[in-house]
Amino acid sequence: MTVLSAPSLTDVQMVVDEVWGTFLGTEEPLVPGPAGDLEVGWSAAVSITGEWRGLVSVELPGPMAAEVTRRMLGLVDGLDPTSDEDVADAVGELVNMIGGNVKSLMPGPSTLSLPVVAAGRVARPSDVVEACRLDAGWGGAPLVVSVHVHA
Amino acid sequence: MDALIIDDSRAMRSILRRTVTELGFETLEAGNGQEALDHLEAGRVPDLCLIDWNMPVMDGYTFITRVRANPDWRGITLMMVTTESEHGQIVRALAAGAHEYVIKPFTPDAIAEKLELLGLVAKPVPA
Amino acid sequence: MTISPPSFAFVSDLARRETAMLYDPGKEYLVEARLLPLAREAGCADVDGYVARLRTDPVEQAKALDALTINETSWFRDNAPYQAFTEVMLPAMVAARSHVRHLSIWSAACSSGQEAYSLAMLLDQHLPAGWTAQILATDVSTTMLARVDAGRYSQVEMNRGLPATSLVKYFSRAGSEWEISEDLKRMVRTQQLNLSAPFPLLPTFDIVFLRNVLIYFDLETKRDILRRMRQVVAPDGFLLLGSSETTLDLEDDWNREAHGRTQLHRPATTTLQPIALTGA
Image 1: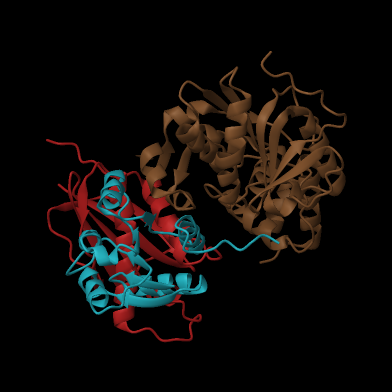
Image 2 (image 1 turned 90 degrees about the horizontal axis):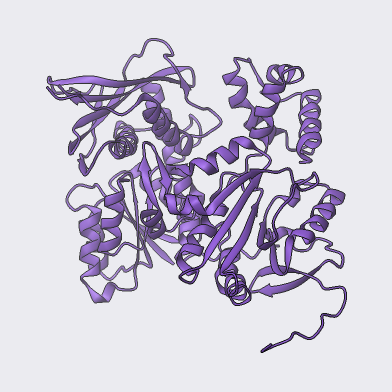
């Protein structure tokens, strides 16, 4: 039986903080800890294969996904509507950035997949187990970043 | 100066477009390496390419090897802008002909400083 | 959320008294941005609540001072001074120190160490074989010095002005951070030092980088620091200030030499030097 290796919560937190702080504005920082019940509006995942195998996912409520999209596209707060296509693109890029940096926390070389994005929850393979879970709040709403590994 | 922004995410292209426009570049965009090659082959040869690694159709690493194989495109400065951040991958990209490498996430200052290193952006003379 | 005038006055007095750094009115946003994370960590509702606690808690005061003295730093910041280092200062000092084959350099107000390690990278690339160099990195903040000793930098910090070739040559991954090589760490020694107070016993330095820190001090303190600097820079050595600091009134202690857009300062000789004996 092999020991499941997973990134530490501290390292994952640091990766997520950097992505958030850089692209989504420092005036509204990510607050660690659960921030209430998460009603998943959008989610996205990337898989990592190679020396290390795992799945990195991000789950957000719908309004937060829209706000992430507006900020990444540089649209004025709340004014411009965002299409589902825009939201899928932005949330996909978010998980790409987090996933790529999580990959670098683990022994390499490994390959990063293109992101899979879904309105609602993305389906995970049945043989994975959660190895690391970061609950956080942004603008008073909850989000979850998790790392799953193959059992 | 012209910059070709190559990234499959429109949101990321938008971030990069705002950053380099601020630095005085005219921009062109491509959603993957093949679209970027199409621009080059059609004679739209930029001074700078900002290149994501993971993209559908043709990835950024392959794009770099293709650009480097054509002597006509020797003058293009190639800068990877990617979440790929393993030590070995940066080495690989540089060996293939990338001039610089920026890891996502980045601040606009990081892009500006790298372009200064490459001599593509003149640092304003301090007052 | 905004910091109240009495809270801001308390913080700027504290910073001025302990570090001689000036936070003038108008810098409220800066104080807020730097203290807000500490306020959250301490469980205070806002920055004013945190400042109330600062008034009686010396441990938090030390943390707040650390946070207030953090400067955003890039590798090879502003580029030109490092060009001057490689093209002018280093060759001059190598010529002048061939008898000892050692250089002594001071990175004053080193913050998280990017300046000291940028210099270490250049020394690694340009110092002749068989030579050694020591870089003293000092800062008022012990938190910063601990970071320099650890030599670990976040992804975002790594992107700031560090050529990719240097990244792959001198750094390896360490979790979510990157760690500088042991060889470069050995070149850098840290020491806590408050520039506004009398210097402790220091060696004589061939080159001193004192950049982007004088702007925080009042005129009298600036003059005093530059007078004391004069005592620790070798007579044939160099002092480099930040680009906005070169027009300061340097009195008669320093001569200026321009290299491109970089101003190099060298100790002025008040009396005529005797003619150098050559070939003796």
